[in-house]
Image 1 (tube, rainbow, N blue to C red):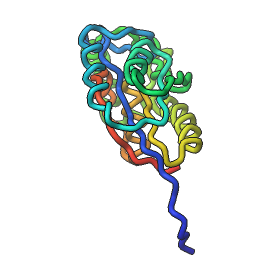
Image 2: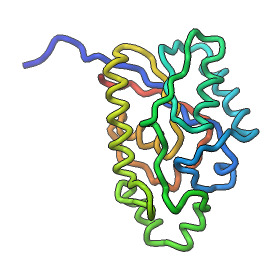
Image 3: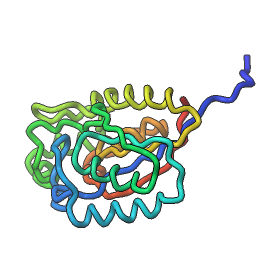
Length: 194
């Protein structure tokens, strides 16, 4: 039986926060609470200009400093208050926090290759698997989207979690985690079924 009722959809503006000093150095920040660096603040100003003409019904952000700072700038001049969502906390990299990505490539080549070929299987020592992080964040995303039918919502989420969200919402394979580890102050529009 074909339903004549159109599926409810939301528009998601998925925003990666501006860069931190760890992003500039190629270090894994994961769930560390890092503020924006100077380049990151410039990226966020550019984001705010690019998104100025787009209606936003809500802005949700991860509980880290870079996401909080990014969301605060994005709502300036809008009748919105950003809302922090604990479930948007970035992937817990355990013992990898603060390590150079290149250091992991050199010292743990098999694990590094696995992150490129099967990212969902990667679990840093003492950390959270990519698959577990994707499952965790998508529960929250789906709950927010059910409440936001036919609205435009912004999610300010750091990478690599943002790339996992994009892959899930676009029904794509998870990306090579090593290529999406650092934030770039960018955004993308995703049409999401509710």
